[in-house]
Amino acid sequence: MSELALRPLPLHRRIFRFLLVGWNFLVIYLSYKRVQRSSLTGPGRDAAYSEVHRKSAERIYRLAARMEGLLIKTCQFISSRADVAPPEYVAVLGRLQDRVPPRPFAEIEAQVERELGARPDELFAEFARRPVASASLAQVHRARTKDGRDVAVKVQYPGIERVVETDLRNLSILVRLLARLEPNFDFRVLMDEVRKYTPRELDFVREGHNAERIARDLAHRSDVAVPTVLWEYTARRVLTTEFIEGTKISDIPALLERGIDPNQVALIMTEAYCEQILVHGFFHADPHPGNLLVLPGPVVVFIDFGLCKDLPEDFRVNYARLTVAIMQQDDAAMARAFRALGFETKSQDPGSLIALGHAFFDSIGPEQRPYVDADVMPEVNERLARILNQNPVQRIPPDILMIFRVLGLMSGLQRRLDSRVNMFDTIGPYARREAGPFPDLAGEAAG
Image 1 (cartoon, rainbow, N blue to C red):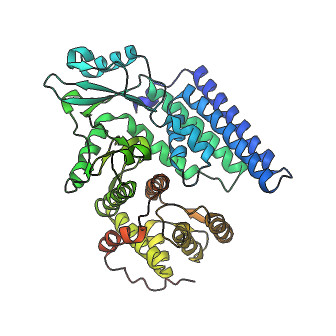
Image 2 (tube, one colour):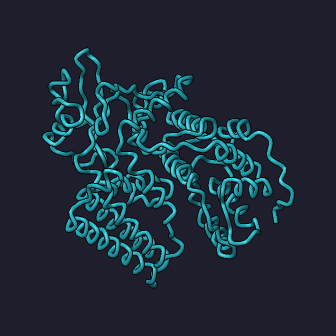
Image 3 (cartoon, helix red, strand yellow):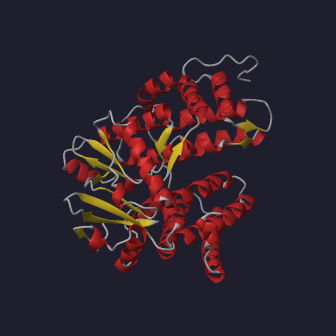
């Protein structure tokens, strides 16, 4: 049995957290329903939605800052989707990317001593009392080893395992409730994946091995960096790596001030993910702005490897085939690739799968932008919903969800960077090389 299961929060705290989240969920839901059912039209309706967005974002921010844990990670994800999330959410929740209220140093000091057997001032020549970053599950302190190496010490918040376990249960209940109230917003499959992967982020030894694996995979690239792990100062709840002082990838003014071309940064990021997903089948799955830094060159620095995904080999190849089929707008190949990946629809008619493939293609618009084209998305969503209502997708393979997460977060970053990267020109060579020849499956038609 896992440590999470052995150490639940006291019952009164679990109930309190559920009621607090549930109440805020209800207030926000009713606020949107009120505008949805109003007689407002045009600019008046837009202004009403903007006000609800702002108030809801502020409410969520206050709730997450108070409760910490999984709610902060959710806010980080929403604020990273500048391509689709309302700007009010991006602006307000973006404050939680790496500026979560830190824990008192005494708690951090005690956690280090429990995990490494000595206090920070005994282990290190210098150890800053104020963190350089504080996030949902841990905070990072700058330190210097006794042999003179500058390091980043990531310390997990004491007791956060129990908070995460409670939040996972509470959010699962609310996601099921939302699916009943609004069938078009059924996130149960995604929640299952969150329940599977979030506890793994609490094992910093695993995170250290993840970092080393990706560092090996991308070692041939001089434009990508991964901090070195110092295992002598690492345990399950403390991770120590070399300290790299870079510019946050979303800080465009700072990039420009340092003579760094944001579009070149976007290209490096895209190529690095193409290689991780399509070539190696193992990838950093949390590219929000707080986890990507930039050095002059430019060099993109990946940090925080708690959330990584290892794809089965046949899935990796079939995903490459799907990518090629979408780029070529080959309906029959799209249907074959979707089914090979594990997608299932209510009927055998491949029309819904083909429509899904076309939606991916159409979402980046005629210019093949590297982020979702907000101008075309309403029409794309309406057309897709009409087809899916006739023949719904009944099974989405769990392995695809982390890829969708990365694509979504990257889309938001590409928009912030005002990227001009041509997605098909960049992805195409990787996908075509890894896809190989398509299997000739008789009887599969475009419908």
